[in-house]
Image (cartoon, rainbow, N blue to C red):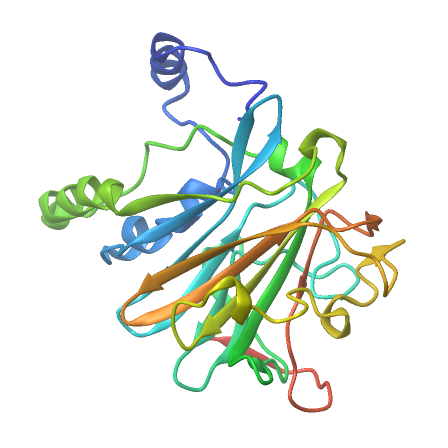
Length: 283
């Protein structure tokens, strides 16, 4: 249920829940970020909710990220309601989330089959250094603003729980609500007049000053072929946010790049070796 379909008061939401016993699609960003809790009973740690302006003084989430106890960055993107091109692969399956493994800094994409089983896909994706700044690029994400506006804003309240584990899971579910940290990205520019937004996530040695930022936070070597009309010399304003979690520091750059995105969303991953196809299959 997107923002246009959603009821404008709590009474309306409660009425829908009583009638449908379910709110929100499986693609809901909020649902996917707590998938492990509802399916496996695993606790959810701190999750950063990344929001972007959408015009008319409104803002909507464009993604969520966390650093797990196993030292893995997990990023969930807002998703379109149709198949699209991701990672420059025609007709590729839309990912549920992206994972960066530490200390190797390798990257893989996870999607789910209709039966709920996960499939992990990787290539030669691995963080890339931006010398001499000490910044290490982890991923880039681009999404049309129409997708951001069309996302589900009400989430499902119905999920299966083994009776023997009901009390613990209910406690964890309630506790997880306090672990969502809103991280607003006040991207400069008129959001309503922009076709798409872009994010770039970096690992940094620590908190940096403005003077310590690299000359470019959207390297064209990674963004090639994702958008039309984005010239090498184009400049556009960006906003930078710095996040700390589990002893690691991250820098997030966000902006409205020029031109038009070729599809609803696309990822750019750094590579350290010639491209090759590799599907690790089910784990």
